[in-house]
Length: 120
Image 1 (cartoon, rainbow, N blue to C red):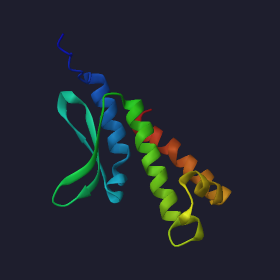
Image 2 (image 1 turned 45 degrees about the vertical axis):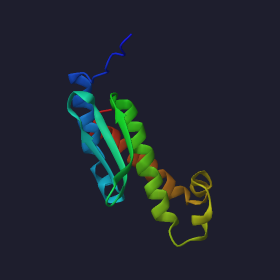
Image 3 (image 1 turned 90 degrees about the vertical axis):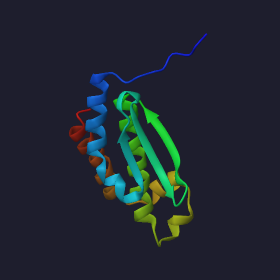
Image 4 (image 1 turned 180 degrees about the vertical axis):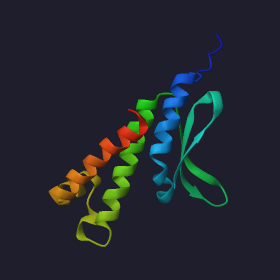
């Protein structure tokens, strides 16, 4: 039996486009989201010359794309805050616990801002 190709609906394509547009600042940390027509949206990550991107993930659902990009953005922010500090040696979960409460609240508010921009 031939496996059926999954395509993205026009409605989800528009929603995913809004999500990708909301997270354009991820380009600064080496994450690129591109539209692949009827195949969905592709998150490209970890570019290494001359071989290209080391990681590629396809999305057909705007909510999944939003949650994935939010997680990537949050991790990038935590790493920026931890840079050149003793907490850099900790795992991501433990780094979060060592970030000041006010900064954690600011990062969580940013999630709501992304959701609003993405129409989620």
